[in-house]
Amino acid sequence: CHFINGTEHVRYVERHSYNREQFVHFDSDAGHYVGDTPFGEIQARYWNSQQEFMEYKQGQVGTFCWHNYDVITPFLVER
Image 1 (cartoon, helix red, strand yellow):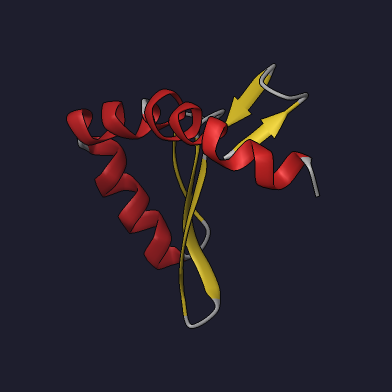
Image 2 (cartoon, one colour):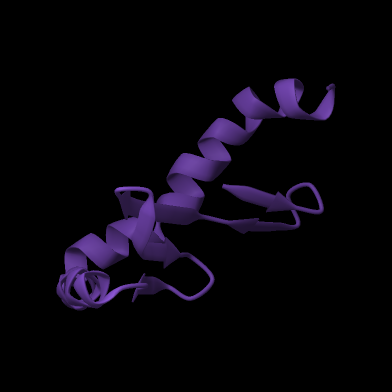
């Protein structure tokens, strides 16, 4: 989760890598998976075609990021 200007803008980014190479990533600003390698493009097409799965991923900003903001903030802001 990336919190920009406090809570003014929240961005959820999920990266998948294999052998230290990122092959696919999800960005909540884009709203879908993006393949970074030929294999990642195949994975991205598959995951983007799963409607319920994509709705879940797009909701991660609200459920995962906002839920953890209160927990993470004291450690990040005060240091």
